[in-house]
Image 1: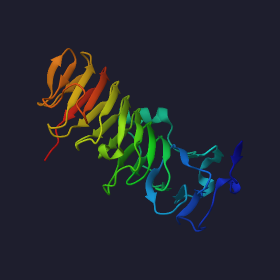
Image 2: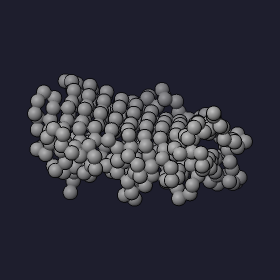
Image 3: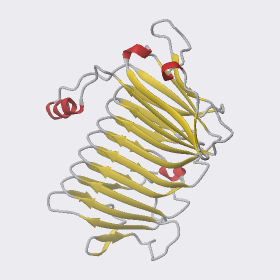
Image 4: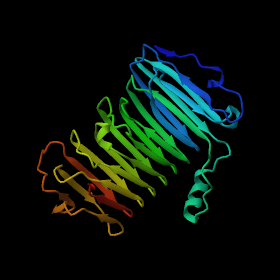
Length: 298
């Protein structure tokens, strides 16, 4: 039995009417039937901020825009014990993806929009998050939240993910997935995600994975780089590290001194042994891009 939650008129709630005032655009209240939340967010432009909330609402979304200045989709429904929420916002006048490619190649990209979305999520219930960004910037604070799965896709946006308060994920995360076309994704304090699987799919953009703190569990990091850059910050030599890499003569791979070649396309540090606990295990593939390992700076 599927139960659809009541939608507001047009899916929009307004908390102010004057031009430039911050307004509440979308909200989803807590529902006792929901044990988990599946949230999909798609934004083609602007600046997005995601933060934990002290309240119980599943979603509160604010903006400095008038609702008629953008098109949107807003769907919320309960299936079984899962609350599914889908929000898509689109500026009709924003630059298309093909124009963005030309802009980045020829250096004529316009100044980032001053329009923003502020999104607050409760830390009371576990989420599966799927975040899809076109242009602009996104800052994602996951401190102390309960994220079961995370999927980030950036066409040409700059995305920063971290745990600035130092509070780790409340639950074990299954998979931390990143896909980048032309954008940039930086992940800080990845150990606080409590994930055992990290996947980075890099096209022409850039991904930075901060693994410089000792992991609390064994991590498998799979990376595929076409013509972009994947930078990996490693912890100290006490953490076991094993790297398996498939490369080509068109790419560049920079290892740190502590990683020694132990076979064809395989590297490890002195702390690594088979079945070593809390190890970092890399399975990487690069064709025309760059993979850069960096040591932790004390």
